[in-house]
Length: 270
Length: 207
Image 1: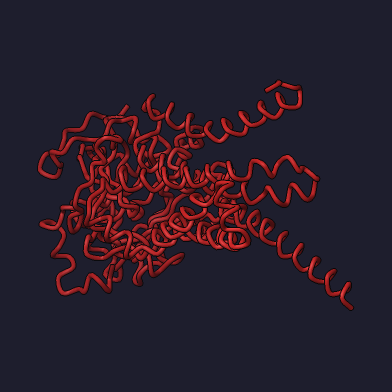
Image 2 (image 1 turned 120 degrees about the vertical axis):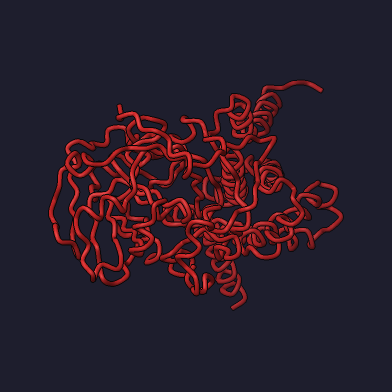
C-alpha cells in the first residue's frame, strides 16, 4: 500500500526482525486496553481516514493540516530499528517512515522552540481504554522531545511497517519512533505537534515521576524502581530459549546519540 | 466396600474437585504446545499461573465463610485440596519465572530476589506456604494438636503478601487489583466479624 521505499542500510540494524504477526499482536497501546493483545483485538475498526494534524506553538506556519498534505513531500524509506520497552522486552522492527526533523523544518521552528510535544487522539468512543475509571493515566497521551532529539536523523515519523501501512494497533496513521529511548516515548496516532519553549508535561512522567523520566533514554545502569533494566528479553522468545540479552546504553545507538547528553548526569535525568 | 449411592456421590464429588483446578493448567499447556501464547509466552505463563495461584488461595479461604453461610458442611472436606493446589500453582509460577524469564541466570536470580520488593514479597508468600502444605495431612494435624490451627493462621499473612505482590505490579490500571482486593477484604473481614460476634457473645454469657 505504501510507495516502495528503499532501505536505509546505514541506519538499519542487521539483526533479524521479529515476524510480522508478533509485531502486530504484541502491543502496548493503553488507549485500547492494557493487555498485550488488547490493541490488536480492539483497534481493528479504528478510523484513520480522514485524519488531520495540528501543528502549533513556536512555528512560523501553524495550522491544521490534512495528513496527506503533511506526508506528501516526504520520501518514505525503510529503517530496521531495535525497540526496547521499559518493561524489559525488545523487538526488531522494520519501520517505514521519514525523519521527523524534515517535517519540522517545513513549518519553520522559531528561535524559542526548545521542545516538541506530541498528542495522541482523544476519542473514548473509539479507544475504550480512555474511558475506564481505573486508570491512573490522564488522557490524551502526551509525549515530548528536546529540539535536538527531535531533529536527530534517527528520529523517525513512521507511517508503515514491513512495507505496509501501519496497522491501527501499531499507531496508525502515523507515529513517532525514537529508537534509543524506551518505547513509551514513541507516541502513536498523533493528532498534534506543538513546539514549545518549556519542557512539556508528558503522560508517564506525570503519572509516576520516580519511575519514568522525561528523557527515558535506554540505560542498563539505571533500573526502574521495580525491575532491572540491565537485561532484556528479545521477542519473540520461545520457552526453550528465553532470549535474554544485555541491554546496551542508548539501546545500542550510543555512537550516534550519546553526544546529545554530554555533561548531563544520566542518573538524575533518567 | 459397598458402593452405596451416598458413597458414589462422594467419590464423584472428590474427583470433580480434584480435576477442576487442573483445568487452567491443562488449558495453558495446550496453548503452549499449540504455540499460541503470543510473542512473549514466558510472560503469559508467569501471569497466568500467578493469577490462578491467587484465585485458588481465595477459593481455599472461601471454604469457611461459605460453609457457615450456606451450612455446606461437606465443603470443609475439600479445603486441604484447594490449599495444596494453591501451593502447587505457586511453585509452578515461581519455577516458570526462574526458567522462562530469568533463564536460571544466577546473577539475575540473585538480583531479583534481593532487590525487587514485589519479588521478595511473592517469594516469601510461597516459602510460608510450604510448611502449611507439609503439615496439611491428617496425621500432622493430629500430632500438632492446637498448634496446628495456630500455624495455619499464617495463611492470612500469606494472602496479604500475595495481594501486595499483585498490587506492586500495577502500572496504570488498578481495576483487577481492586476487585481481588475487595474479595480478600471480604474473606478476611468475615472472619473478624465472626470473631467479634463470638467474643461478644462469650462476654455476655460470663456477665
